[in-house]
Length: 236
Image (tube, rainbow, N blue to C red; front, side, top):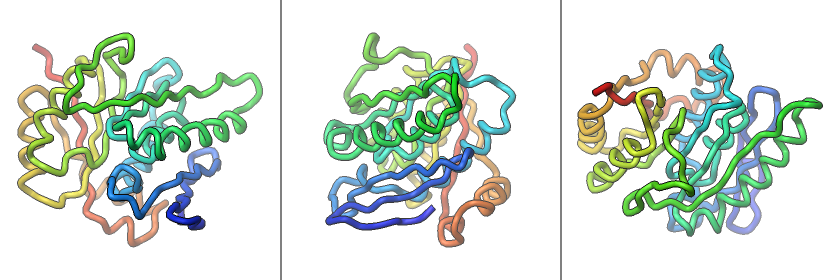
C-alpha cells in the first residue's frame, strides 16, 4: 500500500487485497471536502474487515453491505471484493467528484480478475445525506447484513443523525462496524454511549487490531490511534 503518483491535485493510493489484486484509489488532497481524502481509519478498518471476512465460514455472496460516508471508496470496495453486494454512499459532491469513478474503475479490475464461471461482483454508488434523508425503498432496501463506516463521527451534532441512520438500516442480525480516530475523546465517548441505548457495543481490542494490521501496514499507519467498534441491534 502506497501513494503511487500525483497528477495535478490527485494522488493514487494502492491497496492490495486478498487475491493480490491492487485497488487504485484516486483522492484529491487539495480539496476542502474531507470526503475526497483517504483517512487512516479507512485503511485500517479495510484491512481489519478483509481479515475478518476472510476467516469467516459464512457465504458472503448473498449478503448485502452498505457503507456510509464512503469518501474515496476504499472500504466499500474491499467489502465488495470479498463477495458482498455493496452499496457505497456519500454526499452528491463526493459521489460526482471522486467516488463514482473510483468504484467504476476498480470494480472493472476486480471482475477481470475473477475466475472463469465466477459470479461478477456487484457494487452500486448512491447519493445519501444521512443527516436529513429517510432511507426508504426502492432506493435503499434495509435491513443490510453488514453496515460499515469510518470517520463519520467527528462532531457532537452528527451523533444523533448517524445513530438514527444505522438504526433504520439494521435489524437484529445486522453487523455494524464503525472505525474512527480518537481526535476528541468527548465526541467518541458520547457516540459510544448513544449507541448503547439501542445496540450492543464492543470495541475491537487494541492488541488484536494491531496484531492484524502490523502484518500488512506501514509502521507510520499502524501507530495511528484508530478504534473500531462492532455494533449489533438489541433484541426488544
